[in-house]
Length: 186
Image (cartoon, rainbow, N blue to C red; front, side, top):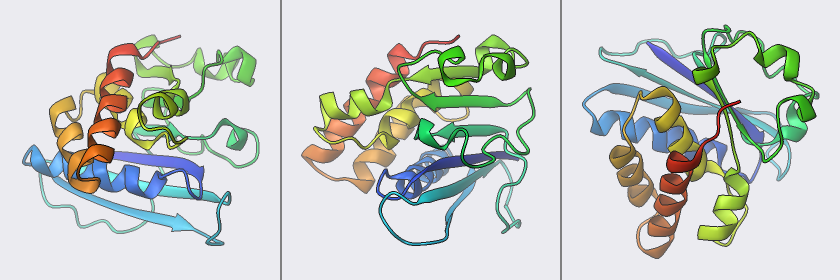
């Protein structure tokens, strides 16, 4: 089973991100599940969302404590909550930022990961460019597909279009494709 934990803030689309990732996996004939965890239901409050992907039925229903991949939507959470708890250094780390890991205070931590297991992606900037709103979720899914290869970009784009039909879906799919094509590994 491959487990993903997404950290963000209310209103950034973390829950939708997990849902779309689950749909993308399902479209590839895998079993998947997605669900959120949050305390106060208000904009800007820390939010976690979870996704599991497997080739057999998933019976587990608790939060993801030991993720295989961690997606960080908002770098202001890096030093406020224990984001990295349970993440093995053989796992994957995707951070929404234009800054370097060393600038974020993570330089020593990320040196423990294989270089092809970590990436930064300017997901918010891509969302602003393609969608016109600072919602990084679709772009982060494109980066997830490129980095982990657990789902393929066409499935991600189809899941995005299913969640957001019409022009909004097309714009978000374009942001995901741009992130897929441009992730930079450090």
